[in-house]
Length: 133
Image (cartoon, rainbow, N blue to C red; front, top):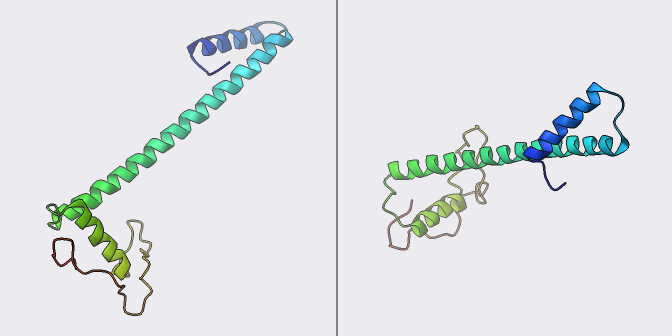
């Protein structure tokens, strides 16, 4: 059996009712019943995993919208994607995240957070010559 579909479900229901109604199932049908139950369990697990992946993707999408909304509120909506990426990379590299926390309250860590001066050797302006920080 390749998968668990409507016909497999119908056959499973037939075998279950047959096993409950009368004497012991013949070995071939007993094995088929066991296989169908296993396939049903595997299908339920796969469905659960898919639901978890969808939930993870939705959480990630919500976070992207949240951060994007903050960037727009800060007046960065007109910046190019490359300039925004450079500005965010600069924040991380400079360690300006030292006092920042994630939504859950745990501290944000960047590569330069623990440097004595809190700054790294990165440009302070974007490709257009505008000051980033």
